[in-house]
Image (cartoon, rainbow, N blue to C red):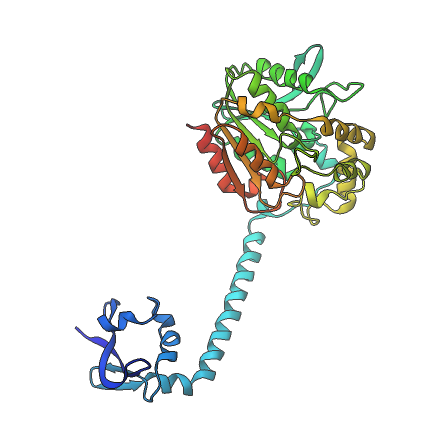
Length: 396
């Protein structure tokens, strides 16, 4: 068997001595260090070997390779050819970058389905491909639709404002629900006074919203189901789960909190001023990078986004909802939850900071907390690890 012997001629702490084999490279790719050489701070990486040896070697010739009868002074060779090697390395980097850009361009060119298409208000307001149905909640029609598989059932309580037609065409929500629908029967609904549900004269109370969840569950014959609360839909989901433990198989809390507003006994909350800005600036598009940062301006320009906000609700309605959000506080219910609970939160969520999600997990018995890298608020489609965790959670 041919072997490659790497010798040394002197060491800092040992001084000149008879050459000893330092590294043996076999023809089959295997390699090992001489026993005494393992005392050196050398990483097990041939590519880093010369770098780590250099500070320990003084005299020339310092590194010698023997292959049969051939002896080569490696250090001298590297020193004399450093410019050539640097040029080759730079060329390889540039070549690699060009390959990456070219591959991305060709991938998008020949995969038209994956191209980002500019969204218009007409597209956003197009009818949902999932038939709209209605549940009766004390005489109020609650709009809902169903998509995905037959079991298990996942009923989703939406965030601050919703519209089933818009949600079916808005990439973050559409893609998230499609991902969940691959392993669950997903039920979405519009809260009373929003979207396709019946309008009401004032913002619904928390007990009324809990009734809406029950009405949709009854209408879809969902006796036992998983309940997911997104953002402002979290507190109503927590209250329903606490009052109906026999119906909730598991609770998923995504980008939400038990209390929104900051107070002396809840210093981690959002300032009242920050919440007020949401209502006061509605329709101006100033919150797009907070609520929907994953929607690029190539997909939806700022003018369209402003129209999108107005399509969902007028400024007066959002101000009323913000005032309602200030009153929400279900912290006292958290220790009473008995169903399995999964809390999911983006680490850089700017709408509802992750510290508020961690509070939920810390105060709900046996809750699991999944923190996802990113600054999004509700786009799980960009977080496959979160989708997989939810799938595993629902399959237990």
